[in-house]
Length: 179
Image 1 (cartoon, rainbow, N blue to C red):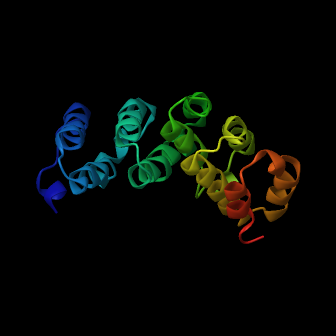
Image 2: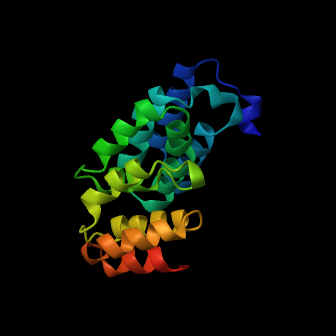
Image 3: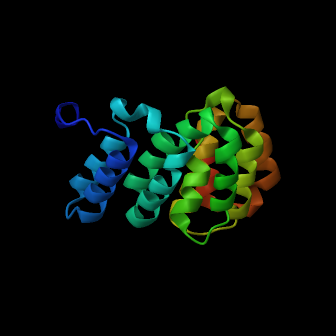
């Protein structure tokens, strides 16, 4: 691949290349390539809390589900799992942000964590958005709960029983889809 043939020498060069591809890209595919570069195996050691400002930039300036979901689930989520002490406070802050894409990221970051899901963090990231009526936030709430229901359906049932009235119909339907 192009990435294998042109390995970047250090973290700064990698971040600069990602930012240039992202910020200067005129086509969606250029931004997809920037996201792919963030996940290329040669740069796995850069996946730590120091990369969160770069990912936040991609989230806020990308401002659409196809970009944000990939960054939330496949970049921010793994960093959270390796360093929850550093990342959880960032996600809690994003969960109350006016920017819907930061909120969505805080909600989706634990998708795929299964039994390793930090339920306190999940609840904290869901709570500020339960009554939010923006489609992409509501969809994220339902998706996160539906995915966690594959691990602990009873917990999700209890959560819906306690908080379902605060949630949009979309969130409730998505959460209960496989219960």
